[in-house]
Image (tube, rainbow, N blue to C red; front, side, top):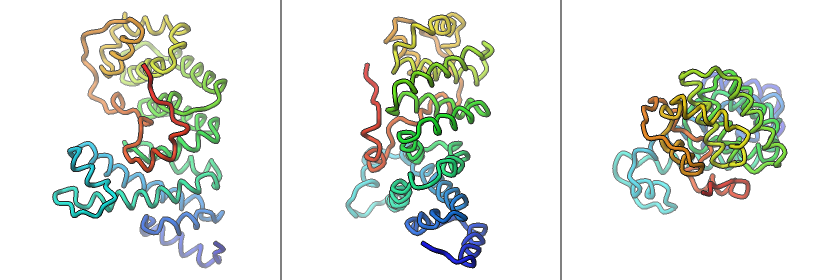
Length: 287
């Protein structure tokens, strides 16, 4: 879509006044192909998709299964109750997601990654799979991006990093390198009960549940997690799964009440249409 200089200016001015309208996301994606408009348009698209996904994700957590099934149904059966508007919001999200997903490889990867830097602070269940898809094509760029963010804000971004390492199919030599780098990061931490340390060590146990060969090289770290009592501050489900796989034992938990211990960003998305876009690259957990 060739835009005149005036049209570009008018569009940029409109973004200052109001976010993009996801109902016309197909047109917004075309605008994002314009070199001048790419960064602000992608940023606005991802931000609005994130806001909508955050709402959808919250509703998923509070609705009954029957209510959720009504909301995601392809049929237009009338819905009653507080979730009556959810179906339309899901359809708007999927419309916009599909158009951005179809074009995601056409943009400069740095522009897309920048657009996600703030959105990943939100607890969502779907939008992050655009990053997952990018990782399938360019893992070094995406993992480099997440490692950089994790250094700045470990409690938020280490769960993204560890979850992507174990869930996304990438070249084995690259995956081995990322796990080695993660272990090196763990070894560099001060052994304190801070939330940052608890999150980091928990993420490492989570990786071990998928990549069991890692345990041999990290036995000293893992032994310390249990001897020090650090395990008792973690998400009980992660610790008990690890113990069941590797013969460790821990019974007493006083976990921090912190979302980052209970959020695994690349567990399967809650919308089937999103899951279908990444299924061939997705690694499922096996006991």
